[in-house]
Image 1 (tube, rainbow, N blue to C red):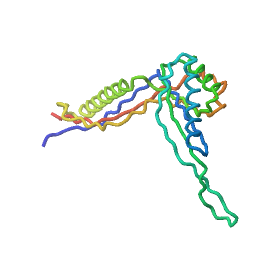
Image 2: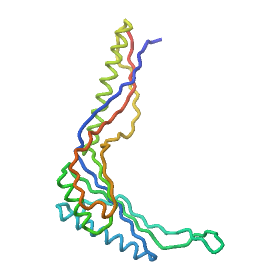
Image 3: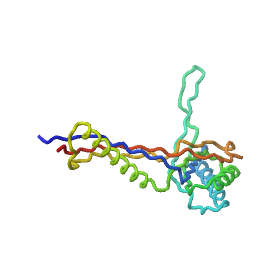
Image 4: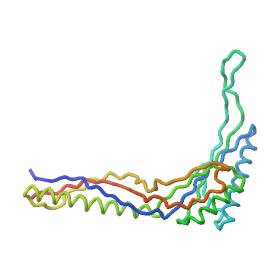
Length: 214
């Protein structure tokens, strides 16, 4: 039976975010379907005007999700019994604006959105423009870490490490977002000037390596 050494390589990287993602949520309510949709579309128009005013193209504002739902509320009658009452429709949009790291542009964009009157719920995330590069660095780091562990184990055991026999890697999504973030709704975003330095992105991944022992 072939003797082997199996180790888990842990890859870790820490890097500065170079990309900003602004996510915007719009929600309108009305007793009429057409009015709910029209109000939401009007808010989208105001947002597009806001972002173009600071230098973006209007198609830089991407739609992630659109939905229209019926709106019901629980209402108590004179006997204290509750029933669902139809109140109309809710129309929602979820949009994203992404651009290279530029805190000054971020500040001007937020001010423009706040002044637009779109009453959007806003959140800001800091990430990397090329997440594939992060995955590559993690895999290199994991492979180096595994080899160092295997060499140490073999040396301490008085044996020699042979050829690499297998690599077991579970492909999974890597979190490439900074822990620093910001969220606000409506007028709460007015006047914010986020001049802070986002925390570095810290990512980790693992893989199992098997070497022969000779």
